[in-house]
Figure (cartoon, rainbow, N blue to C red):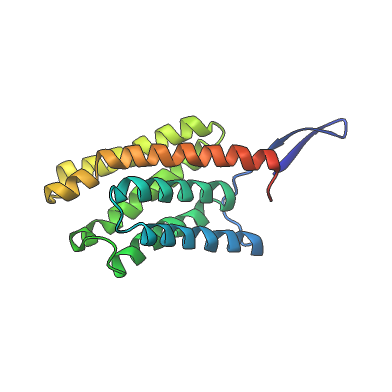
Length: 181
């Protein structure tokens, strides 16, 4: 949090989005986000409508990581869960070839949100759209995959990124008011 003062009085607080931080508390936050992004999908792996629930949760965790620990630390949060989920057998084997693209789409989500952080709702809409457009174009024109995976990599990506973004913005607003450090 950054305090904005006028004549020595605090008139507002502003949430700071760090680029990267190696403070102990930020490293702990990064680890917590990574663990959350791994644990929630693992717990919910066999639930009906898994992608809708876990996709929303993971997208919100990634966006909260951008807000709390910065763009570079959030990239770790985007890279590790997909890789571990594949290694643990939580993803269908045919998705193995898509993991680098899923990670890249999450990095796109992170970058767009980070650079539009002054307008969080605009950032969420554009970040989710950029992620969706990347995956839609990739799976429609460049990579041939079976229909079930094609569906997973297109429209649900937009909706889960938007839903996760709305959750993240809500949490950011709540925590900013409480001035959680």
